[in-house]
Amino acid sequence: MSVALGITRPPLIRSVPVNHPEELIARLPQAPPYAWVQRGEGLVGWGEAFRVAVPPGADRFEWARRWLATTFGEARIDDDVHVPGSGPVAFGSFTFDPAATGSVLVVPRVVIGRREGRSWMTTVGDPPIELMTPARSPGRIVYGDGSLTAPEWQHAVSRAVGEIRSGRLEKVVLARDLVATAERDIDVRVLLDRLARAYPDCYTFSCAGLVGATPELLVRHTGEEIESLVLAGTTARGAGPADDEARGAALFASAKDRQEHVCAVASVREALAPLCSALEVPEEPELLVLPNVQHLASRVRGRLADGASVLDVVAAMHPTAAVGGTPTAVALEVIRELEGMNRGGYAGPVGWIDARGDGEWGIALRCGYVEGRRARLFAGCGIMGGSDPASELAEAQAKFRVMRYALEG
Image (cartoon, rainbow, N blue to C red; front, side, top):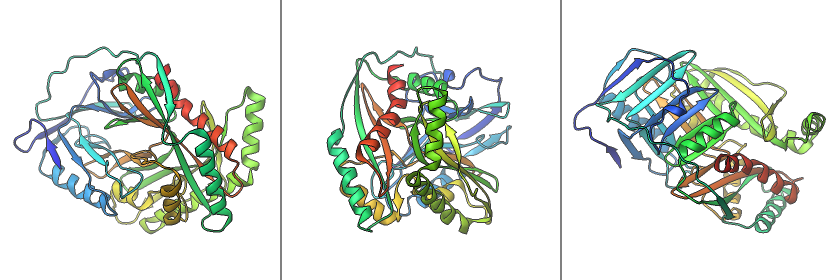
């Protein structure tokens, strides 16, 4: 169902240059906000001009693309900026499982953007006057088990290893959840600010209650050019520089992690090759060092052959082996059998798209759903035939630290 709030005729969507905002997230007047920010650039928005629940199914991205074409096509557009992210913009979150409900697209009433030294504001119709409300810390946080306890999740990992060793599949990504209850209602703006400051190289995002800072860029679409950052293979940060270096070297030397990364890169290459006239895939990964973990990373670049929109590329790529497994269909079956939960938007595509079809979409990792005083946090690990359940649990705990920091400060 599509909802247009306070708009009774084709709206005027206007983008105009504005003075460089000091901080995008600091401009958000209220919760719930919309955000996609990296290193101080990106988009933030608030209010809802249009909102639609995307029906589940294999054709959901095509349905979303058609809905956007109709919604944007009916608007009167006055764009004085003419860069990716100006003019009409929709933020979106799609569930990991195509059969699950919960995918959503939202066109905010107000969007502020910053890109390569240029800043702008986009408004839909006559934007309401918003009063800046002060953000407040959520206070004391109490944590509890999610769908599975730690021992139960380790047992699920053991079962997954058994499935892999039996030859049923090569890799599967298993996620677990953790429930956080705060002393006061959780203001998403506080979480966004903490995440953006602590993890500037990640993509800090907020869409329809799903909040996080993902290191994984599914696709950036600018004209005919696309880019994807593939992450697979993880180790925790060390206690000091020497330990850090040793852990990074061990990650590069790990047969399990290297094979996991090969699977992830191969799935991206397979998805993008039919769409691209040219595709650059590095032969060797690099090391991406974040404040809490280190990843094996490969940056894939391509040129589209037929002018596909960013949602067409997202549809071709999701789910990658980095968040699902290999082969994909079997991995999805194993995830449904063993995880014991509905992921919702966790590990699904999250990001934004404009009327030109440009946009940036990440994989919703290091994130959680926030509602009132409660947050449901997620972390996942790539399981291979040589995986150790205790080590995978420790890796998941390290990944939870991102959102725990956002909540606790």
